[in-house]
Structures are given as C-alpha cells and as structure tokens.
Image 1 (tube, one colour):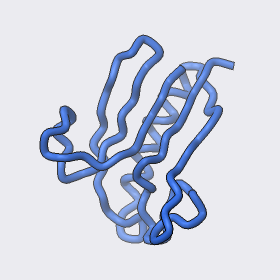
Image 2 (image 1 turned 90 degrees about the horizontal axis):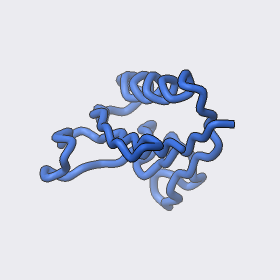
Image 3 (image 1 turned 90 degrees about the vertical axis):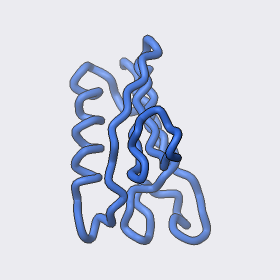
Length: 101
C-alpha cells in the first residue's frame, strides 16, 4: 500500500519545504519521499494541483489504484470535507491511500 499525505510543515521538518506545503509519499517498503508544493491559491496558479496530479499518476502507473481519500472537515475553509477548500487551495491534511487491486 502507498500512503500519500498533503500537509503544511514547520521550519524543522525533514523535507526542508518550509514555508511551502509538502506531499509526503510512503511506499509499501516504508521509503519516505517529500515533494514541496507551493501554497498558492488555485485561482492564481494551478501548479500545486499539477504537481500533485503528477505524483499521484506516478503511483497509479506502477499498478496501484486509489482506494480511499480522506480530507479533514473544518468549519471555515472546508465545510464539505473536500480536497479543494473554499479558498481554492488544496486541503491540508488530505490523505490518499493506494493499493494493488
């Protein structure tokens, strides 16, 4: 199983992505890789979504299938629990689960 998370980071995070957000990929063998994602609004710049799409497609191209996506529920920016918040940013705390069918 692959687990992928989209989160914000602190200055001490091992990814060195701060002040950007990070896409963390954990492979079935436990290998952890990080991809820095700009924190811009998708209204202004679609590059965060482009990068996430490329990273998720890389996993799918290895034969994995997306089996679950969880996004946090917050009252101010993500009332529906969707992966895109009402301020047009990718929702921090989203988790993607991939498995071999």
